Image (cartoon, rainbow, N blue to C red):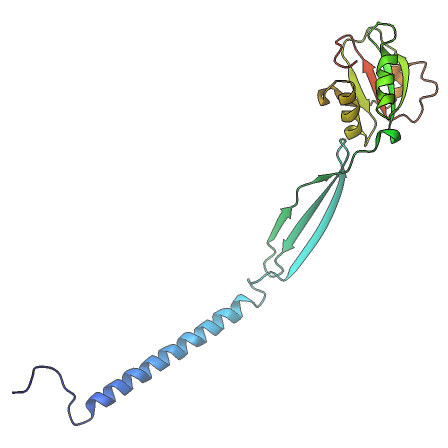
Length: 201
């Protein structure tokens, strides 16, 4: 008795059918390859593909708190006009050493000798310092004024005198107008006004 199952006939029809299936598979693979080549060639031809141009721009800006340098990298896709930008975190320029910073301490407290005490503290820390009187006495609030580019140094001066960065202000156009008898302090960078609040001393 012959076991159940399917056997190829002896007329060769099974071989013909497998050959036809293989041929159809080869044709389908060929068509898929052609479509892939066409898609790839269209994707990189200038109508929408890989970025082909990049611009690197370095921007330097004076922020009033020292010089800040930020590097901005801009990539423009030449074939689409799209632009992407990446900004690198800004780096603040280093603080000048005390010997290169000139500070005027003006007494607005009404207490005799207060500016001299503060001047001596700054001199001991290495600053070039002078003691003067403020135009307005008493001045209510202590303030540390700085000329452009000296904000970081002004923070250090305020800290040396026991104050905080909240006391900092950009100097007015004529900072010498804050000082009574301003002779001899031309070219100074920081103007400390000691106020009655004793925020710095």
